Amino acid sequence: MFGEDGNKVEARWYIDAYTRRDDRNAVLLELAKLDYNMVQAAHQIDMINISRWWKNLDLPKQLPFVARDRLVECFLWTSGVVPEPQYKMSREAVTKLTTLVTVIDDVYDIYATLDEVKLFTNAIERWDVNAVEELPDYMKLCYMAIFNTTNEIGYDILKEQNSNAETERGDVLKSVQCYMHNNGVTEEVAREYIRQLADEAWKKMNAELWVDSRSFD
Image (cartoon, rainbow, N blue to C red; front, side, top):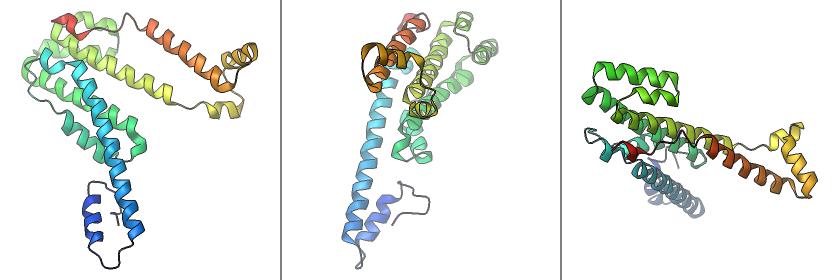
């Protein structure tokens, strides 16, 4: 029923065509429609999450010279590359970064001087939050948007990693084992507690790195 590449963009056409066949399998057709609707709903949730991120970032308002708001276009492109529902995190990450790249492209092409472009490129290559002090205010917004978004993506990926494989290899973190032993709790409870500690430590460690975009108004 679906193309060899499993492209969901074409799925609706195949479903409609199959519906008109006299020898159609009703169960197969119903499953195809259900799958289509589930994938569509998953993409809608993705788009809601990404739109919320973009709205909170507020770059178009902070940088009025940016000519393009291509969030939806970037999302549609990414969804075509990785359409499978299980790659939700990849879709969101790639959409965010490609959207930011279009903003930086406008900065380079429309607004920035050659010296400013060199400063920004050097700051990106260094990947050091202290480099932001060398940039003009409008570029600080761009740099911190990329810096924070990339770090958030990296942190989310780390949180998503399942450590069950480590347990099977005998590489369970000692902190988890100690908490289980000292408090008489299950491994799941211990891991959640350690994860919360890690979250708090991460927030404290990065407290000085987070720059509110509105501070450069």
